[in-house]
Amino acid sequence: MATSRNLKLVVVLALTAGLGPITIHVILPVLPEIQRVFTATSAVTQLTLTLGVLAMAVSTIFYGPAADRFGRKPVLLIGLMLFILGSVVCIWSPNVETLIFGRLVQAIGGASGMVVARATIRDMFSREESARMIGQVMSIVVISPIISPVIGGFIVQFAGWQYIFILTAVMGLVTLTFALPNIRETRVANAQTSRLVDTFRAFPSLLRDPAFVAYAGYAGCGMGVFMVVAGGVPFLMADVFQRSPAAFGMFFMMMSGSFLIGTVISSRITLRVGLDRMIQIGSTGSMVAALFVPALFLADVQSPWAIFIPGIIMGIFHGLAMPNAQAGAVSVNPQVAGSASGLTMFLQMTIGAAFGQAAGMLPHDSGLPIAILIGLAGFGGFAVYNGRKFLFRE
Image 1 (cartoon, one colour):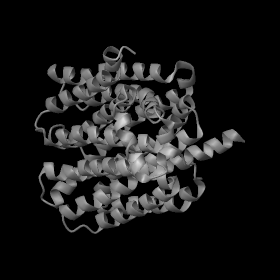
Image 2 (image 1 turned 90 degrees about the horizontal axis):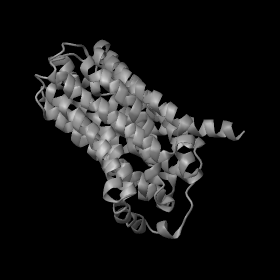
Image 3 (image 1 turned 30 degrees about the horizontal axis):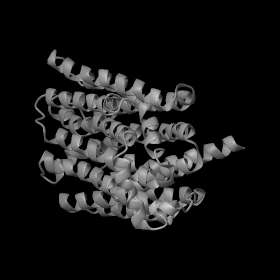
Image 4 (image 1 turned 180 degrees about the horizontal axis):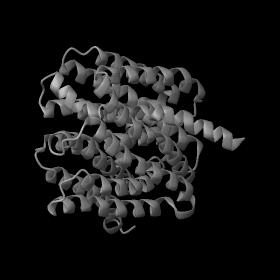
């Protein structure tokens, strides 16, 4: 019975947490089409992605403390309503500025499920068990970035970019109707969250904790790798490799699929191997794979496979490490799990958005600049996590 209840919980939380990744990934194959329709520059078009990620990041700063103070379900309800509203604005956007605004509202709403899902898991399970449960949730959530670029690519190819946001609006309504009623309130009032202002005071202590910084920093650089691919490679596929939006979606599906494999493995072996050991393995493997990307382009291998074959390997190792990094971050101080979840997501998305915007601003007449940025993100994840052992002698 407990296993059945846990399975239902995993599916419901995955549905709510998946809206955020869908918001990010479903638009990727559409970026060149949006640029063409609104006659915008690639840098401005890129803002529909990176400003959305930043809005999602900033909103998690408030969702986390609010979830600790007012409860998990009220925060999720408000977020779902904003997600649906933002999708509707995007559908009727007459210009790129309105589209960017709609994406901001959509992203702010989508962030609520990401915060609430992790906080709810930490409310209900121990540190190591939380890593396993987060791994199971992510195994389902990661399906959204696997299929959403493919769906987005075919939608823009055979219908129109507006239908992307019709799809997200419907998904928001489905989540509001079916997922929200099945999530029970798990927040327990305590002295640290009795007032909203007190929950924000948890941030400085978390940021002074080397373990929290290491966990959240790795999560940020891990997302940075995917954001470089998401933000820069669609333009390379169109301008350098002469591939269609649907082709990018298929390539990205392979990379995301390998991440799914990693999260499934993580959920099965973390209890035996240990949370920190899993991150060590994942951060090392992903760094090595990331550094292969610029090496291949320097060797004049001009092909999408020079990005996506190492990317598939990176995805597996990130899948091993990411659930454990997120579980570690929210376990530093379980009494403020919501605040820790929000701050972790903020750092993860801010770092990821910075890498993604940098990818959009780089020249797209060659694959080498994007390849170097992928290598930097992979090395950064390894350095920020493993560096604490040398700096603090852990």
